[in-house]
Length: 269
Ligand code: DGT
Ligand code: MG
Ligand code: MG
Ligand code: MG
Ligand code: MG
Image (cartoon, rainbow, N blue to C red; front, side, top):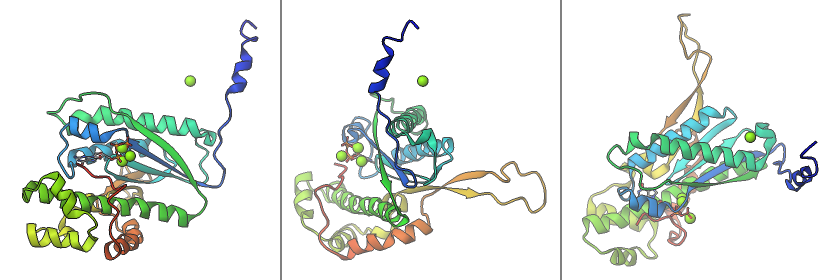
């Protein structure tokens, strides 16, 4: 064979199988979206167009991969849970990460004009991707609780910060200083007493993120032809009931508790 003397290089490609019998959690995150958001004039603190575009790209990924059972999105990130027993791409890590990240990214670009009809893309966005394996359902639940607590912490901070700047006339430096070391309830109080904003009335999408899950469409009781009958569909819930309630405790712990971390919080400034 003409190529045989070169074929040995193939042996340098090492297998990268993911441990069987574990939950595969795949998360992607926009690369330098601080800059991307600025360049494309995302509204602060939240740009509903950008969030809906993320949801749309995630929905496409969920539709393409039936082994994804749940997805959660906030800001420039999305997490996807694959069933424990999945044999997708023989559980090859780099194949899964690269293919899903690539599909999400191309869907994001593909649907961009639908959400930003008056804002042409200034440059091609990219996303990083990673996989974490979790052995038990408790880990999976705590993972999603952790992401949702992050959504809440960041959104409360950003909402208060931008109220101080946009409505309170403060500079960003002043707003930073005003919020340094404040507790969650103090931010609620600033929003309510100074800006007449009841934080709990803010769109749940901003406070709690988006959840995508599959819902069984029941058989048509009339026996008529229901094209969706027997198929799974994907529902995007802005305000999911079950997952939200399960994760609520960690969110409220934070709301009652210590000073919110301002470092490490993703601030849309
Ligand atoms: P990275 O992920 O390390 O490459 O860097 P970034 O800049 O993507 O940082 P990250 O992922 O921690 O934070 C997300 C950034 O995305 C954040 O700085 C602000 C921006 N962003 C996300 N959603 C919105 C939005 O709805 N409105 C605005 N104005 N900015 C947003
Ligand atoms: Mg990012
Ligand atoms: Mg970052
Ligand atoms: Mg992020
Ligand atoms: Mg090929």
